[in-house]
Length: 64
Image 1 (cartoon, rainbow, N blue to C red):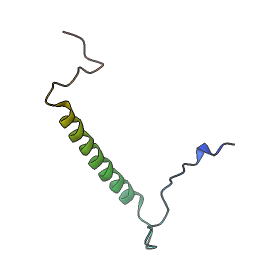
Image 2 (cartoon, rainbow, N blue to C red):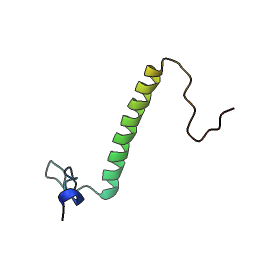
Image 3 (cartoon, rainbow, N blue to C red):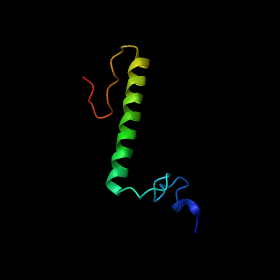
Protein backbone atom coordinates (compact mmCIF):
# COMPACT_ATOMS: atom_id res chain seq x y z
CA UNK A 1 0.00 0.00 0.00
CA UNK A 2 1.09 3.54 -0.62
CA UNK A 3 1.21 6.27 1.99
CA UNK A 4 -0.94 8.59 -0.14
CA UNK A 5 -4.04 7.52 1.75
CA UNK A 6 -2.80 9.24 4.91
CA UNK A 7 -2.54 13.03 4.54
CA UNK A 8 0.70 14.54 5.77
CA UNK A 9 -1.06 17.41 7.53
CA UNK A 10 -3.79 15.81 9.59
CA UNK A 11 -5.83 17.60 12.22
CA UNK A 12 -4.70 16.52 15.70
CA UNK A 13 -7.45 14.92 17.78
CA UNK A 14 -6.81 17.33 20.66
CA UNK A 15 -6.24 21.05 20.95
CA UNK A 16 -2.53 21.99 20.85
CA UNK A 17 -2.79 23.46 24.35
CA UNK A 18 -3.49 19.99 25.73
CA UNK A 19 -7.03 20.93 26.74
CA UNK A 20 -10.17 18.97 26.04
CA UNK A 21 -10.61 17.84 22.42
CA UNK A 22 -12.67 20.18 20.28
CA UNK A 23 -15.99 19.01 18.98
CA UNK A 24 -16.18 18.20 15.30
CA UNK A 25 -18.72 20.97 14.73
CA UNK A 26 -16.43 23.54 16.33
CA UNK A 27 -13.50 22.36 14.19
CA UNK A 28 -15.62 22.60 11.05
CA UNK A 29 -16.82 26.10 11.98
CA UNK A 30 -13.24 27.27 12.51
CA UNK A 31 -12.10 25.74 9.22
CA UNK A 32 -15.03 27.31 7.35
CA UNK A 33 -14.29 30.71 8.90
CA UNK A 34 -10.63 30.45 7.85
CA UNK A 35 -11.63 29.34 4.35
CA UNK A 36 -14.11 32.20 4.06
CA UNK A 37 -11.44 34.70 5.10
CA UNK A 38 -9.00 33.24 2.56
CA UNK A 39 -11.60 33.39 -0.21
CA UNK A 40 -12.50 36.97 0.69
CA UNK A 41 -8.85 37.97 0.50
CA UNK A 42 -8.44 36.16 -2.83
CA UNK A 43 -11.54 37.91 -4.18
CA UNK A 44 -10.19 41.29 -3.09
CA UNK A 45 -6.83 40.51 -4.71
CA UNK A 46 -8.51 39.47 -7.95
CA UNK A 47 -10.74 42.55 -7.97
CA UNK A 48 -7.76 44.86 -7.50
CA UNK A 49 -5.67 43.09 -10.15
CA UNK A 50 -8.55 43.29 -12.66
CA UNK A 51 -8.12 47.07 -12.68
CA UNK A 52 -11.84 47.70 -13.06
CA UNK A 53 -12.16 45.60 -16.22
CA UNK A 54 -15.35 43.64 -16.77
CA UNK A 55 -15.18 40.03 -15.69
CA UNK A 56 -14.57 37.55 -18.52
CA UNK A 57 -17.57 35.46 -19.56
CA UNK A 58 -18.07 32.24 -17.67
CA UNK A 59 -17.59 28.92 -19.44
CA UNK A 60 -21.34 28.15 -19.35
CA UNK A 61 -22.40 31.48 -20.88
CA UNK A 62 -23.30 31.56 -24.56
CA UNK A 63 -21.79 34.35 -26.65
CA UNK A 64 -24.25 37.11 -27.57
